[in-house]
Image (cartoon, rainbow over all chains, first blue to last red; front, top):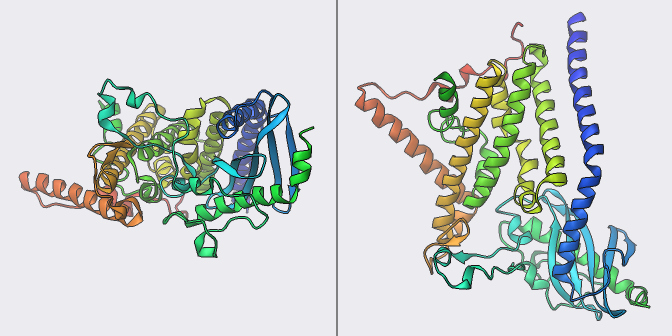
Length: 217
Length: 224
């Protein structure tokens, strides 16, 4: 009895110490983390939006849906809406939350899809979330500019399927679920999660289209 | 000399993947490319170093009977800390490349294994060398597995095309390929061990590290 009390106290102290260290680190890093997240979002926005002269990060509309909030960032040039980016998430990823950022033109056609936050398995799930480019190793030795022009937006066969499709209220599903999106083998769960996140944004846009476009004025 | 041995044993003689056969979950999952292998290896190396330092420092304060839960708390704290610090201060490219590996480290038994088998019994400098050696051995093994799978799978190395028009071999990119390549690597290690033993005129025995009798991880009833 005395022994188990001693052990409980030792374990309790360890946990309390760990908790206080984490609390301290959490409060210390909260602002730098938010700042880093803001920078990343800014960079992602410039990839999916057309040219703009406003600040889309501050020009946003929040829409509450059953599956969480969706944000629309508006890109304007000379006060006129040139495009918008929808940000939504799905809880169905293999490692939990998966967040996407989708470029849309004012008539609601999907452009570039980016996965901006995820915890999928490297090498498997990341096949549908990452955009990467395979270059020839010989280009490193060549003097030509081939390796200099590494695109900031490399292709991803899975994500590029959404480009050109209209954002509708029905959303998107992978073929296994009776939809038209081709899932990547070995990454079906991740493929589904991306389709789910895109659907969330797509549905939010379709059902609040007038509201969002009215914000132009 | 002894410090150097603590370091070098992790790379070959007690390589965590190829000899101790620890950490199979991340090994099989992430070695689809050399780059992924390196990312996982480096992230693990970092956490291993931190946990070995902390555990070596507190090894005399923790009662034996509750040491395993205490180690788990220390490791989990360290992983969370590393994740928060990386999100806050690391360059975005580094965070993007290594960030996804960090949650996987919590389930990596190399970290707990080294805490129990080494750091809890040895001094700080030796524990640091052990962590660095094991981390390096893990990274090198994952990179070798990743390079093999990536090359056979698509003719690429480090996501660079080495042989143009390589016929894509999908098996290598998925889990079955990981098992096949790992099996061949383990067979290779055994073959080298056997040849070495034959040269010295001895019978080949499985390294002591492979039998679980040296590890007291499950023996919680032990007297303290």
